[in-house]
Image 1 (cartoon, rainbow, N blue to C red):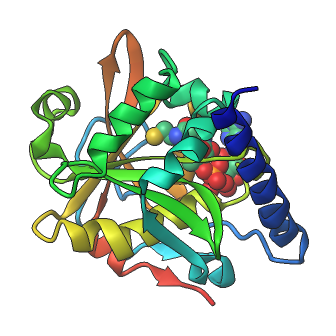
Image 2 (cartoon, rainbow, N blue to C red; image 1 turned 120 degrees about the vertical axis):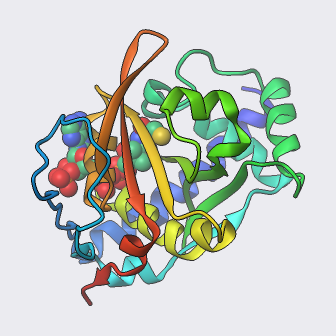
Length: 243
Ligand SMILES: CC(C)(COP(=O)(O)OP(=O)(O)OC[C@H]1O[C@@H](n2cnc3c(N)ncnc32)[C@H](O)[C@@H]1OP(=O)(O)O)[C@@H](O)C(=O)NCCC(=O)NCCS
């Protein structure tokens, strides 16, 4: 095993242990309440209604409180490289090809430049790294804007690093807290966040809907059907956190 892989593996083992202890320690794994847009059926191609009232969320307040987002640093890259190899990440994230270490390092090093349009973060629960999330202005990526059919707003991509932790409510917590505390404050002039998932990525679609994202339309990327969803700044900021 190479040095980079060893570093990644050691970090991952520590992470699994700590977050799994939290999951076993009696925390209620609560679920956000999904909500239906008035007059809109699933699959209907229309922009989400702004008449929708504030998102009402049931969430684990303690887990929410201890989530934080640390700007990605060069020191994080070996661990990130390990995370990108995980089968559940590869299934829908970096799907086509996993870059080699040098290629990946070069790709992410440029993102550490404060002038780079994509802002990258490690999600942490307490001091334990939980996953990765990045955000960017749609207008900064014209090809992407054309693909999703939107000119304004922000987008984000994320993954939970360890397969043992997916499907336990972390994704929705991360989405809501990241949008409220980091992404919308960072891009103050933008008012909507777009996210898209492969139509087969049922887990991601459920997590995003649970965070308040709503269906906008389908589109095709490289022959695969994707679902575009949206969440507005005022909705996520008005989200009621039940404590
Ligand atoms: C997408 C992702 C970030 C969501 O995080 P998460 O912590 O798993 O999400 P949550 O636990 O909040 O929600 C997952 C939902 O999917 C459900 N789910 C879990 N496994 C599922 C499966 N195999 N099929 C369908 N639904 C599934 C969960 O029950 C939950 O829904 P519910 O609360 O309505 O029951 C995480 O799964 C992940 O990292 N996936 C791999 C990378 C990826 O797909 N990223 C998105 C592309 S940008």
